[in-house]
Length: 308
Image (cartoon, rainbow, N blue to C red; front, top):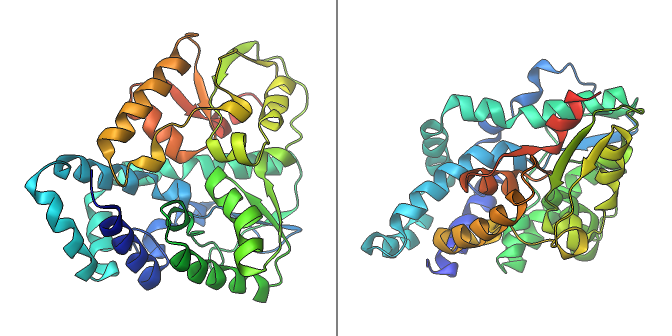
């Protein structure tokens, strides 16, 4: 296991310098929207929080952490905070395969298609779409999280943003629950699946749904994607740990101990695989971990666009 303080120091420095936990310049991360012809205004602002875009970089950095854990190299991690964020971030970006980066943007394009199909009035402004800082909060660096959250909130307030559509559970929780508490900024925050109106279909399909912790345990919105699926004729298998009692995928532990994360991940993947049906989730962290464990997992958005 790595020293949590060493990890936190590196992440916090990167966020301070680049507004990204990996130090990757935003123009290198957030490119998915360039072929979508999106308006920049609407009743809602589409806000990705860059979590899906970060997925391939999380995979790559975790790969290196796994090779260092419980070795003599682990002690040198603390010196990473002396490397400028943009420098280490650009290096990580260059080491990550272009195909992985392109694939990471597909769920976001799916969401755009679903929102358009549902006639939701929304716009997108990449200049306002920032990482929420949620990992700093998760790891206990409340001071750094608050400083970053205030910057993000101020930009949204100056742009007079009131209503926000989110895509992943981490960003949703940060903007809906943490920003009001720690920055005083209040927005109407709605996960995209709560705005969908896709019409009745008869997909005649059965899936196993994995509820991310923030959507299931804390925001308690697990019934909403199930209603959307049911409207398309997609049935859900029953497993023991779901909805408010969902089990963690192991993602929150991977920064400190990839080995511990893998053990948690394997337990959850086996539970989800038991019914023998395709596994569906709505979190890039969960999906990455489940696929790493060999699970047949896909994003909710990809399933929905297939059946509209």
